[in-house]
Amino acid sequence: MSSLVVRSVTKSFGVVEVLGGIDLTVTQGSTTAIVGSSGCGKTTLLRIVAGFEVPDAGVVELGGTEIASGAAVVPAHKRGIGYVAQDGALFPHLTVRQNVMFGLPLRARRSTKRVGELLEMVSLDPEFASRRPDELSGGQQQRVALARALAREPRLMLLDEPFTALDAGLRASMRKSVAATLREAGVTTVLVTHDQEEALSFADQVAVMKSGRLTQVGPPQELYARPTDLFTATFLGDVVMLPARVSTAGTADCPLGPVPVPADTPLGDTRIMLRPEQIVATPTSTAHGSGTPGSDATNAVVLEREFLGHDSLLQIRLTPSDEVRARYRSERTDGVLSVRTVSVVAPEVGADVSLHVLGEAVRVG
Ligand SMILES: Nc1ncnc2c1ncn2[C@@H]1O[C@H](COP(=O)(O)OP(=O)(O)OP(=O)(O)O)[C@@H](O)[C@H]1O
Image (cartoon, rainbow, N blue to C red; front, side):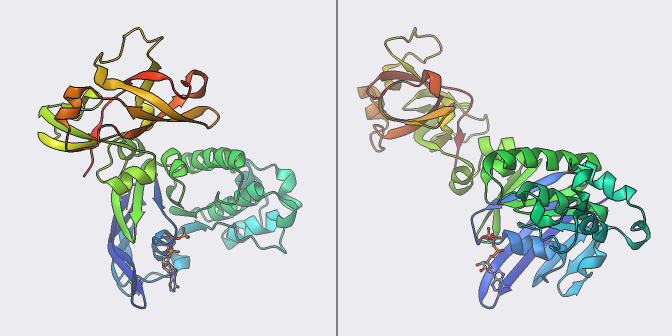
């Protein structure tokens, strides 16, 4: 078993607290992404797990054994942990083969077969084995770095923004192939990134970090659809916040009409969150009424349309009925909302639209 458990880990540099008590469990063979803005403490946490930094307090366990507990530390080279940094950190004067061999235990270095197997594992042509790092693309260098880290047969793989230097297309394909390689090898993995899309697509579990603390940890779909606080919600994507009243379990009344909410949402006045792609805007001239709540409270006008390729982002202004205006009179109900729509059917600026909501809204504290 190589589960990683981090308990109450704190770390300060001088008077600056960088980690304020981190609790995190990564189960054997699973992948966790830690996502947060620059300087929030992600790399420091990774370096503590790797053994390059010592925590001020707290415990790190790997496979049920304490590897860091206050100042008592198992040295980095005895932890069985692989670490791939942002730039790959290959030895520039060594060939690909020699770089990968460096990761192998001494007894395995005589056989070149293992190097070939590792290059195959990271989908790198064996022809590259005799090249030096400067004769490879950024993506190929990252794959060599991963092969070198895998050569140690680590119990835990730590990836510190390994895809950052790559362009968008290569980044997505590398992400997929690396995730598949690690999953097939059954290696417990922690990825650090500031890119929410990367975190959501790569990992079984996502942990959002803010100023040295984790705001929420859970499966990607759950964090995206049911964030518990506004920071987590906005960090993972665009949000639409609306005033609402929950009078019946499972339904919130809001300026868009009745919207489903989780059954355990407390009754009373609240604020609910939707993702922009949950709101469907249909031009009223072509709307047939099907699928829309039918209330004129859901009418709106398109103010702006931003073309983003596959999607377009609309800014729309609600035109609520007098009844809705009265119900939410203490709130701004004629505000501007974001709506994400597929570009081929995006209504034009100035179009009157009716709105309906897909899926559930959630209360965000
Ligand atoms: N050795 C150190 N000495 C002093 N301060 C440090 C040290 N290492 C990190 N810090 C500070 O700790 C804070 C967190 O740094 P860290 O590298 O963990 O953040 P991060 O979330 O990984 O950021 P980024 O995404 O920009 O890499 C930063 O303010 C950084 O300047």
